[in-house]
Image 1: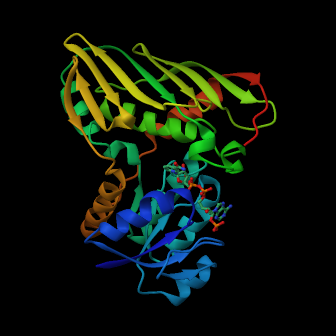
Image 2 (image 1 turned 180 degrees about the vertical axis):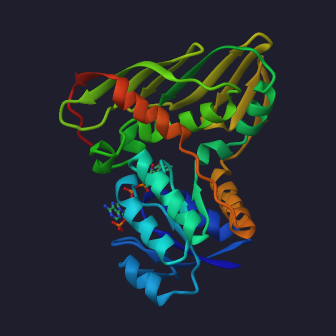
Length: 302
Ligand code: NAP
């Protein structure tokens, strides 16, 4: 098994990365780096440089920290000859992701910009079904409770945190994967809490009659749905892409195996000496923040 180091032992590391690595035949969690978090039975560091120096045996780093600090960690890891796996969204800006891709290529190491929602069970069959269809429209309905999924995480509302586009980028990662044609943003409305720097809700209108409704204030049942209308029937993805229904018939339903699939993919990339860098979902976020009309709404407090 290949030793791997997990950096940023917070919500997503504990919920998904640690269990996915523990169940994998490819990976052994050999160390963690976190100022506060640790994993039982695993060597922990609080300083990233120290880990890089003291553990030359660890060739692969998985970064689970928020997007703003991630670039510096990734750049150091690549400079130290390590393969790097990035949580989504892969950076705070597009340019820094392109810079990392260039560095990784030059250093001959793997860089993987993961998009976990693309690994949801319904996504690949949805893409295959849509490949030869005539699309007449599509809609994203992505509404969840920020207090439940990002408890107390003020970084999501700080510059670079992307606000509702942090989960919204999951929907964008699916739509950019399954649609057989490109789309680009035509207009957007962004709802900024008066005490915050990122939007808590957004409505988007793209070309090809594609729309999106994103909201982080939804309590009760959570909605992670995408509908695609075609001349051959309607395709629905539910549960964040895990359940696929075509013209009312259940096609596939997964059981949240996205993170194990990401680690399988990383193992494959490292083995093949390849990288996978895709910023398509982030382009739509950047476009929304460039083009969107800014509306001020009630202050938000965790
Ligand atoms: P989080 O719990 O707030 O942060 C993860 C860890 O990163 C923290 O525990 C912290 O560990 C470290 N960290 C925070 N700020 C840092 C900084 N400025 N410098 C260095 N380390 C810092 O966030 P999360 O929910 O796990 O999200 C992390 C990433 O995973 C985000 O990109 C998010 O989009 C993605 N993600 C989150 C979810 C979710 O449901 N929450 C789902 C899928 C993907 P220490 O303080 O111990 O160093």
